[in-house]
Image 1 (tube, rainbow, N blue to C red):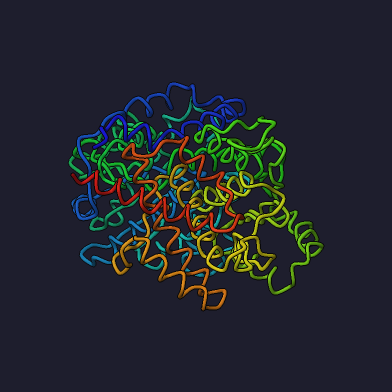
Image 2 (cartoon, rainbow, N blue to C red):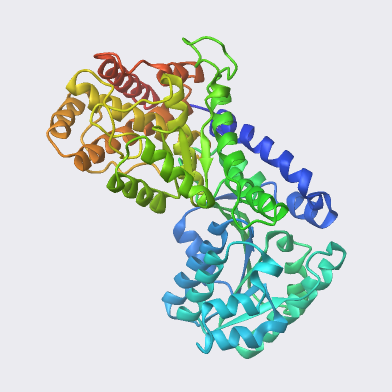
Length: 531
């Protein structure tokens, strides 16, 4: 069984490579990370006492009078998690809940109150609190938090004051926030007060210490989110996914995103702000994911020969289109013979997932950066590139995102096995880059065996395109999950995984042989892991 050190390395290797490039770019834009106040936060949380499960998190929340939630402003998951905690606590029904936020200045409380009373709409609230001018992060997740508090809470309060950009005054902002929270306690003596504030403010010597002096005897719980050092340490735990850890009695840290996801989100905002543009440039993010996965697989991006390496991978990088270039992408797809219904199906897929890789034109379309799906799409590109671009379509007439196209597999069964492998590889790559991705549900699934797979192939090949895709995705994700588990256990190496990416699935019978061999290998790896 793999040691904690080995598990930590295998879960983190690809992410760390990707993270290095992002951090270099962030440091070029933002030198604040070197300031003493921010260093005190990173130095405060290096170790934890133990792993927590959902009931233990629930119990900690119910014992608290004030819940300080660390916010990584650029990460929508941080605000949405705060909303979920507030709603969960309110539904218990034993105490009212109140929300306080750093995002809104205390001076603008009257505007927030007007919105609370439904005298003004969302757009007017956003404009009058100068959200885009003074804050500049995503509005949607913050608005969802406000709505959750209005639906389930007793009040919402703005807690911050100027100046935000001057770190020399940041201690004064902590003292101001503590005083405002004390006022909220006086107005709502029986309520649980949820406070969403920037994570660096929650170092023990910052806002928590000031608040403890302001309100001695109050039960204060600090809920950190996705602290880097704790995340990397938790990657060595046996559990497939660590939900949270107890740092000390009054501090816990939850994990709802990876460090790579955090910093890519911030990099996108830095790029957007530097260009004074409302539409972020997703290309560096996508290219960084591809580059990191290629490095993990030990792929030489400059190899001049096909075989054990894709030829000049560096010259095959895809175009990346965002919202502003959507019309350009439509024209490209139209010239490739993609019908209007097929195009709308692709765009609906992007709406649901945030992005899609389109092999017909070797392009990404990214509407919203969501790490889990972007990582899967980056893997799909690399798999296509390893097999040869400009185009590789499976034998059931659909590409990697459900669009119709020409076939490449020769035998009928090849269509099924090719698609299963494509989904397996895509899922595996997404777990390498985003280990927090949940494992696929397997409770009611048949055993992962050659016979069961052949039976599924017979069913899928008689079905319509939608059912075919559903069956192959389910089998592919299950197989990809087993490959990832075998990798964590040290049963497969990156060089062996590279050969899977390079397999010539378009040759008759190869896809079936590869799929059968992979099933046998992961079954053997699973047996050895339990002996």
